[in-house]
Length: 93
Image (cartoon, rainbow, N blue to C red):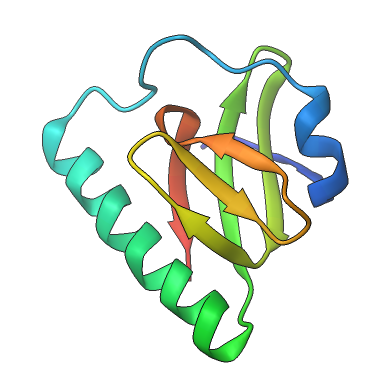
């Protein structure tokens, strides 16, 4: 089991992210996108927070925050910080 260091959303921009996608399986990538859609709706409609687990060059991290927007490339958190979708392992609703 992988251990994730919990950080706050303000720290996200301090990290470097991998160039390639951390998920090799196409089904896991589809599941990640569905979870991001749900998390974005939760954040915009109910101001609900989610746990995002992702990989950085410095090791695995997680952040508990509100997602304001996502595209195919990035997830934008409350406060304007962004995480590349390709680095996200999972979104825990």
